[in-house]
Image (cartoon, rainbow, N blue to C red; front, side, top):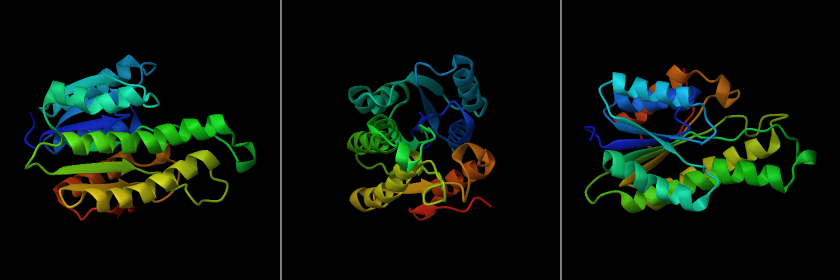
Length: 217
């Protein structure tokens, strides 16, 4: 087990998720990397190698976050592999272009189930399984397109909802479990600077007050 316990990073095989998995390892966590069954195996292995290169253990766990039972079980699976999970990073996200006029039940479900409900289900399981006497940190990754003109509607709505949910989580679970939102100041999530976001995670781990962390400079 890592010095701080272990971290579960959803979407941890690619882009910002991979950078945050590495940042967690740098901070002293062993890391469980959640992937979808359809994700590129080589990408996942490369992300795990980044963690191991920092002297920490890494495991890859396949889970479809739209499947409720599998999502509920994910924290326990990570714990069985690495020991108590004390850091949860919700980085996985679905992105599909749509406008309000195009929104339908399928686009709503795809975004809300992955981008909003899954982080909350995982947060609930995380809090329930946190060992007595340990403190925990939940980091929800946001995209600052919410509220931007012409933002993809379902995607932006799901992230705006997750922002508000993070504030409620901080109130419901604090002070033992901190909940924080981490996001780029502007632009799509995929365009953000991974190193800057990893630096933000490092500040949260080091004890920055929970809440929105929005500056990446």
